[in-house]
Image 1 (tube, rainbow over the protein chains, first blue to last red):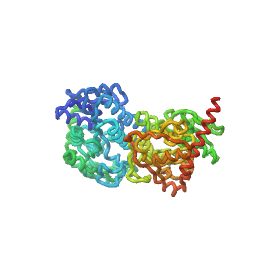
Image 2: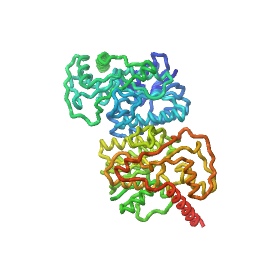
Image 3: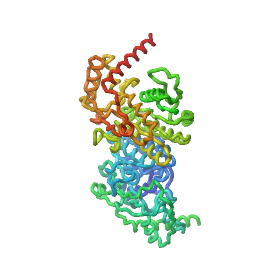
Amino acid sequence: MKALVIGGCGFIGSHVVDRLLRDGHGVRSFNRRPERFRAPLANVDYQFGSLDDSMALIEALTGIDVVFHLASTTFPGTADLNPQSDVRDNLVGTLNLVDSMLDLGIRRIVYMSSGGTVYGIPEQVPTPESHPLRPRSSYGIVKVAIEQYFDQYRRGRGLSPLVIRGSNPYGPRQAHSGVQGVISTFLRRAKEGQPIEIWGDGSVVRDYVHVADLADLCVTGAFSDIEGALNGGSGRGASINEIVEIVSAATGLHLDVIYRPARGIDVPKSVLDVHRARELLGWTSSTDLKRGVAETWEWMKRQDGLAAGRRS
Amino acid sequence: MKALVIGGCGFIGSHVVDRLLRDGHGVRSFNRRPERFRAPLANVDYQFGSLDDSMALIEALTGIDVVFHLASTTFPGTADLNPQSDVRDNLVGTLNLVDSMLDLGIRRIVYMSSGGTVYGIPEQVPTPESHPLRPRSSYGIVKVAIEQYFDQYRRGRGLSPLVIRGSNPYGPRQAHSGVQGVISTFLRRAKEGQPIEIWGDGSVVRDYVHVADLADLCVTGAFSDIEGALNGGSGRGASINEIVEIVSAATGLHLDVIYRPARGIDVPKSVLDVHRARELLGWTSSTDLKRGVAETWEWMKRQDGLAAGRRS
């Protein structure tokens, strides 16, 4: 099978690419920018462009059997700064992608939605896929609209969508600039001896999933006949304070924590109910959080070593 | 108070303008096109433009206390033909409107959403505002996204939104081209001696509300402090076959009905629970359906007489 990975140079996308290659699939990667943390892979066909460029999309889609859409121009914490751009880049762009797919007769798409934002403040934790969708941020509103369009295109135009509502992915190749992922941000701060800022008392609970497990769910799901939404999380919650402890233990470094007043936007507890993915696909997030954080730490040290080597 | 009515030359908008003028408010009307069925009113400040034109919007918003947004470039039956345009024109356009409002310090907006599409296939009929939002068409997906953005702007930026989820409005000045409103379409067909086409067996039930009642709800609500969503319907259902009977009785004309195979998109029964508007505002849709249809018929005959007079 030949797969197109939209966002294949991104954090989740790069792991989906790895998994597809390991399984023997042909891979084309469509991105706005090259990969940040490693050199281009010899057996990947890289193409560059954005989702509003129909001609670039058609070129990228030609000969493709299945599309993985793992790109977003925004992060949960940044999308509210410019909702108009968020809608244009991500919602209109995604509609342009599926319109182009259907024009070329390509029906199967796996889309990375957001288990942490589509449900809003959950009435039920762990939260199942059937929970009402009540997003409270631009990031979540756009994801929900995309999911609803996918379902409408499924009914009316024969699209075959699988939506993965990922929880909080972490692991190697995650950026650590502060907008994406507390684990990579905390590891980076620990390495640089800088303090960590926590909004609130650190009791906020999230569901952290190793990126390779999430990529496994995307690829396993893509080659099944399942349509609709699947939660992609660990099904277990960890507080920010627990993450601080785990990062301390993994790095052997002391972390200075500065507690800031809580931000209004934080949902106190978000953990996904992941029974559906287990029942339908036999999938579980198998990486233990402590082991995954330790592995990410090893990657970060190795990465910095490589960067230092390149500089010298 | 000075009101800006976006879509004031449209069907619902023209009745909101009438009601505002009657109550002694200043009215500016912002539209893509002039009014179809009557000459410009002397005491309305008409401005023309579209919601993607920020400079035209800022000019239209200057000096305004409250905004009524009653415009849509699409109809429920047409939006699915081009979802990208629907999102760009209506969702991005509406975000541009509220961004411009907040830049100018205008907080109050009344928005016409769609009680017939935002709930999807209702689990509960009559359907209350608390029902999950599960739109199945582009028209409904865009309305829901706009409602969610309004709530996010309310929490984060001080917008004061009142969302009216209108049912199926009918009455004078509704177009009768077939895409908007079965009542005006059926009246027109009766007048021209043409047959009526019904998809399915005519048992589909909808909630019809007289446009002047809906305009009353918009204006009464605008000057209250209520935020969030209110259903705007009659709370009573009528089947398509009942509408045929009511139109026959109102016109005294026989209607030929051609039954076509049912379309997949039709929700069998859609009736709004309108208790919330009654409890919070004392509002009810007071116009009896038979009386309202008869009044619309009188308007249509008068309108045709005027048009014939202009032509001769």
